[in-house]
Amino acid sequence: MKFNFVKVKKLKTKAVVFTNVDTYEVQELTLPQPGPEDISVKTLVTAISPGTERWTLRGKHAGTQFPCVPGYHRIGVVEHCGERVSQFQRGDIVYGFQGEWEEPIHSMWGAHVGYSVGHGSGYDLIDTTMPSWKELENLSFLMITEVANRGIRFLDPKPHQTMAIIGGGIIGNCAAQLAMLRGVTPVILDIDPESLALAQTILPHAFSSNAPELEDKLKAIAPGGFDYLYDSVGHAPTTDRMVQQMKSQGTILLQAQYFNKEKCAIDLDEIKFKELTVKTTCGTDSQDRLETMTNIRRRRLKVAPLITHRFKADDLLKGYDLLHTGKPFSLGIVFDWR
View 1: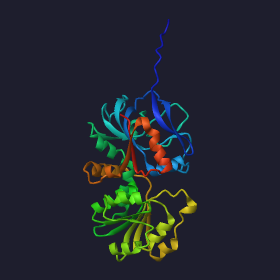
View 2: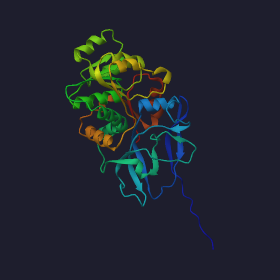
View 3: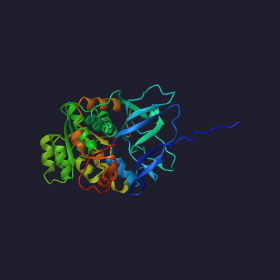
């Protein structure tokens, strides 16, 4: 008896690969055949996480192995569901980055791929119909905005309180907006004039952390000292300086990435003298996702003003040139994979 074997053509996909420290390129990866619990997702939009991906590119993020596919901001459309998949159906718009490939390339979350095959548990439903493109762009930053949501949740500020936020990046700007939704007065502090200019288009107070008259400006907003200090940067001298502007028995949130240990040692004595409470967060959960998605979709949390650059998938490396060099100024960077 003769058997006729049909050769199945393996699916290929384009991907961003960090090949080594500060080295990146676009490669073609080979995807596995979907299993019964897998979904196949065609990418619509991905976004760079400027902090995490920069640390990964520098080789300093915990667990980084080269070569790797970076990123965790990705929205796509479901094209296939395995027979055991019940939570999704073809045409669903999903957020997630679960995927595998045959090449010996590690996944540092692995979002920046044109197509994926992976377990359905790695995705959350965005919608059963296609949202507007603007909404997809805003939602593509879901996880980094969840980080801000978690920070505000942990601090749990009350109306009429004050909060100093170190860092005018995406997390700092979103944390400030979420604080304002609670009736809190936030102040953004940053050293970069372009970051400050952008923050000033969204928020009432954004100052240079190097300004010689900074203390006077801060005292005009919080005469008795700030109730909260939210650190999204990890620059110890700025943190120490801002501890001096804190109210006794206030609260500090340390939410930056503190990989440069020799540069991020803060003055614990000053924190002790003021009897400050120190909180930390790491990661997000389903409550953060639900609250953040709701705030974005109801347009209470404004992400669009934080998007500075948009590229087609043919120009992926231009986005990483911005991330690598920091020039020109960029904040939110999105890729259109349509």
